Amino acid sequence: MTIDQAAADKLLTTTRSVRKRLDLGKPVPPSLIEECLEIALQAPTATNAQNWAFVVVTDPDKKRIIAEHYRDGWATLRAMGYPPPLAEGDPREDVMPKVIESAEYLGSVLDQVPVLVIACVQGRVVETPILVAQASTYGSIAPAAWSFMLAARARGLGSSWTTLHLFHEKEVGELLGIPDDWMQVALLPVAFYTGDDFRPGHRLPAAELTHWNAWGGGAPT
Image (cartoon, rainbow, N blue to C red; front, side, top):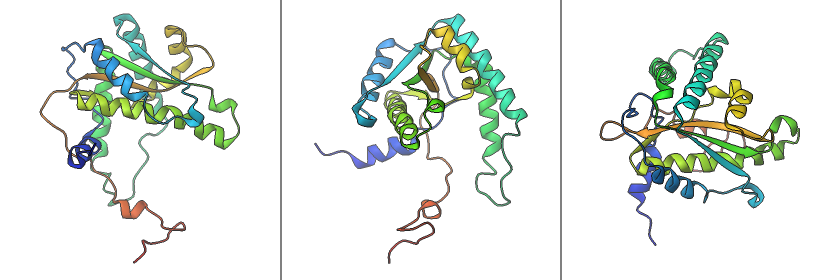
């Protein structure tokens, strides 16, 4: 089967972090979440371990508690000096205030988001001093979570990769009955998005971030 390159490129470049455009009043059918998860589980996984799990939270009381932990995590991060200063002229400088504003908004309404999906992986990197094992652990869940977000985008659902609740990972784990040997990696708020479409985000040029054959090496001519 030939893949429609234009459609694939649009999906990949316009799957944005959706915070302010989440439709808080429109329910998300469980079947849509299940479809996205089936696709997510086709992602690559280190050594074919498939040691991943997703906790889907729709219970209002549990969402409220998770939102409280998220907001506390945001306050902690801000107290630590986030965001760090950027060099004058950095193209990210103009966008950062909008990022901060949207993150604060998400925290204020997180308990109203129809679905919260927590991506988990078995094993804890803090207990694994070997770099290859740490990379494999994250490498087994990050592609699956991103595939979930892409599948959601294709179905009119917005999401955002968030981690602020991890300041209270233990408390959230106890709330949801997540076993201690399973590590939470991301919290994905999921809802239908408002508006018609998304555009590519502001990014640094790939040429500035690419090294050929050695660090600092330019592209072959």
